[in-house]
Amino acid sequence: MKRFLLYFISTVTFIALVFWGYQLPDLAREALMFEGRLEGLYILVVIFTFLFPTLIGILLRLPKFIKEVNEKRKWSIDWVKLCAMGIPTLYVSQIIILFSSLPHSVPLPFSGALMRNIESPLSTIAGIIFGYIVLDSLKEKNDS
Image (cartoon, rainbow, N blue to C red; front, side, top):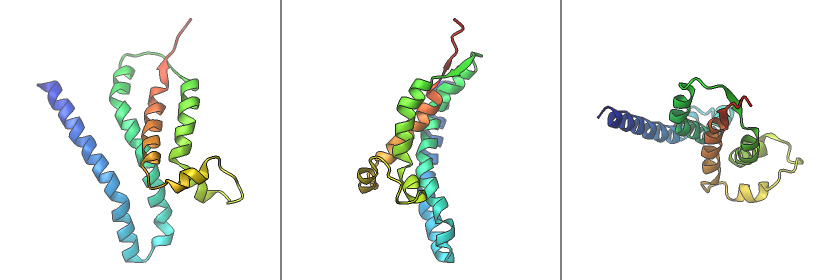
């Protein structure tokens, strides 16, 4: 019963965080528009919108990561996994921030296709995967 309650409370908390996190940018936009300060803080709303999925991915991997940390292992980083899977998912999830912060003369690979599909859940899914991979790329160190 204790295990059930732990899973249940974790799930309800996670769902509440996700719900709140996806409501926050809209609430912030409304507040900024009401105050007439949209231009100054709008970039913070955009950054939060695209970094929040990464936080969700980290939270999804966190319980297993805590369990592994409590086993008192020596840790290293799986650079192959982090580079091969992490960099592309980070790029896809953060393309709008790169596109808006770099000069338009800087060519970004696949930016046209990704920007045309900006309303699709692709960047959200990529952000969740990136967050998960960040913690998953930490592995037990082999002393051999």
